[in-house]
Amino acid sequence: MLHHSQVLQQTATNSRESTRCGAIRNPIISSQQDGRNKLPIGVTVSVNDKDIIYICPFSGAVKGKVLITNYRLYFKSSDADVTVTLDVPLGAISRVEKMGGASSRGENSYGLDITCKDMRNLRFALKQEGHSRRDIFDLLFRHAFPLSHGLLLFAYVTQEKYEENGWNVYKPIEEFRRQGLPNNKWRITFINKNYELCDTYPTVLAVPFKSKEEDLRRVAAFRSRGRIPVLSWIHRENQAVIVRCSQPLVGMSGKRNKDDERYLDLIREANDTIKLTIYDARPNVNAVANKATGGGYEGDEYQNAELMFLDIQNIHVMRESLKKLKDIVYPNVEESHWLSSLESTHWLEHVKLVLSGAIQVADKVSSGNSVVVHCSDGWDRTAQLTSLAMLMLDSHYRTLRGFQVLIEKEWISFGHKFASRIGHGDKNHADQDRSPIFVQFIDCVWQMTKQFPTAFEFNERLLLTILDHLYSCRFGTFLYNCESARDQHEVRSKTVSLWSLVNSKMDIYLNPFYTPESGRVLYPVASMRHLELWVTYYIRWNPRIRQQQQSPVEQRYKELLALRDEYLKKLEELQLSDSSPSSRLANSPTPNTSSSTSSPSQQYTHLHTPF
Image (cartoon, rainbow, N blue to C red):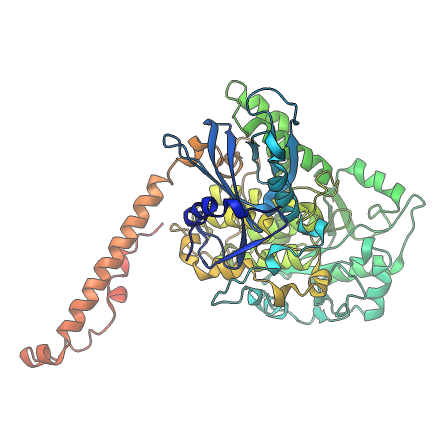
């Protein structure tokens, strides 16, 4: 097994053989570990042995060696007094630019600027003689943006193997059965099995029992991109539902569609809701503006329905907001005007509006009223609202496996445009389709875990892992825009699922404070006073933040659990030795002691500290 340090040592011996960056060279690094200092299995290495200077925003200029593979950039300092390592998956790189020119003057003015998607930027300086940066620039540009160079995404190249197949985590029929479907009000349809009804929807859909297949086709013609209203979740007791879709194609002339109006009324009738509430995630003014491009919203012609606007801004506003946040947290935190600087980004304000909208959806469903949720196309803000509301309403989604199902169901299968929003393998960093919608959702989940520390089986580490691999391209989970595209590119058979990694070492993702409570609805407080900036994600590259240890309470609790397990093991050993043949001969049992055969964990359940 080769470590990075060994590969870096090879650099010197291979220096005479170094070639232009297009040449990828062995060895194959064979390690399944996900640690910072090991390469995942199947990585072909190209060693670039040039001395390089990393312009560290925290330690100044640091000399070292750089290693670039088709998966990551790895830098290790060579200075004895400063230890700096960088480990950047190439998928996290958004932009690579040359800094300075052959005639540039000034120390460290010639090199590379690298902008990352994960809230950090990197700057490297090289010697100006002989176009020394060309190899490293070409290599980075080629493998950070493989799709722009006719190459495969890394998920198709890696050969990682795990015991569990993460692609089996979510099975639509099983999830509908868990919810109690189908029943006499809702049915499962396979009308979209070939993606003919809607090419961005999954193949298995739940629709009103009374609706006919022909009705669905007529409704699809009146909904943006054919994304008809379909069931996401049903309340087991009151049978109220969360239905998701896209905007109706009303247009400037105010077109009507009787089939669409009747279809929404079938949704309302399914549990005798007096008024069906339609939550439009957009600000009112945006919804009106969408009429000019053929879209719009449900008007008064939808009888027995009420329309509510949730004022959540579009993908462009969210992108600019996160950009402003990055400006104030990287490389240095603006201490003197921190609160006003944070407020000026509006990031927490947007998080508040998303959470507030989801709370309204959850509260309406919990009180027995069915709801329809949409934005423009039903794959950004809609996914945020439905998944967060389901997280509040259904404790199953708050388990480690249940949360995986929620992401697979509401985000991946229902066509959140991951490829467009993240830009996997694409060099076009200025693409206006890019937006941190999924990051914002995970932020909202983190806010909920802070307010309800015992309600979630998973911990913060899971959320960080998900966001790291949202960009890394190491797994197929977040690749492409929809199910039909994933089928076309054979993602399930040719790549590994992120959940294979997560479920191979579940212990590290478990929350020690978790207390299962089925049936409990969570209502987080969505006010600015109760929301926090997720420092351990947004500012984690700052060494001062990174050095902070986990909560001392959590650390102590883990120690106590380990101590408990140790005592239970000793107790079990004592019981086994006590029940051995020699001990039974020496101590003949009495009738009233023969029944005490329960396990130590059963006898001493009170040792588990209740939270």
